[in-house]
Image 1 (cartoon, rainbow, N blue to C red):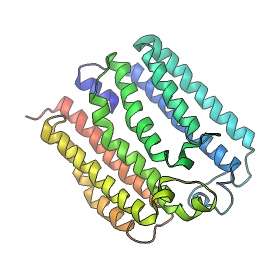
Image 2 (cartoon, helix red, strand yellow; image 1 turned 180 degrees about the vertical axis):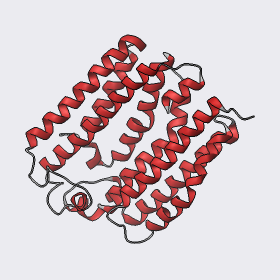
Image 3 (cartoon, rainbow, N blue to C red; image 1 turned 120 degrees about the horizontal axis):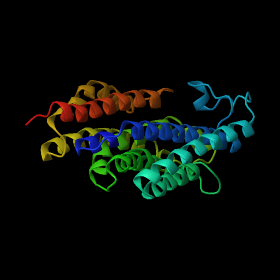
Image 4 (cartoon, rainbow, N blue to C red; image 1 turned 60 degrees about the vertical axis):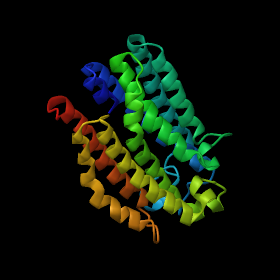
Length: 274
């Protein structure tokens, strides 16, 4: 998305895009693996924990040594930093500052002694990291100049990223409370957290509508409204018992919304509308 906004401004370099994408994928994988490492170490992820009921978790099952998990994470962080170093040599040192901020948030999200997710700051952290910093960094690699455009344009997708985590935390609210992981859902309580999920879901769609009405993005971006029939069942789902797959279902809608949002930006480049 950050690259698409740069392309709208007339800047695009395919090799730099592919290197940025590769670095971001490595960074995302490193974050997830490090999260598994610390959750096992803290006793949060273990056999029978909610997260093991819908996905494989070799660390919690004892199939992979903790040190091996940690080495994989560190290796992927190294790939991230190598990509960032090259991109900084091309686009300027600000890329290193953005990468450093992202890596810091990635580590402190789950690592001792901070453990941001256990302090109710998980959703805010991923909103900033995946919702704002990544699109901004991708934009800067292409355009070589700061702009508020990718930050504003990233807000709806950032909300969806945070909603995936919020759905996870609402589902795990009882378990997290029992292992002293005070997520925002634990702090708010089930009713208020579920209500916040519904409101944020609505805000993501309303934000895109406001962007279109203000001329920030083209009318093509109304394509995201195609996903509304999938949003209403999610909203209703959080008014009753929360299923084990609440976060994968949220992630599926987030993917559909995000792809259509990016398609709309591409259409604005190739088929501009008045």
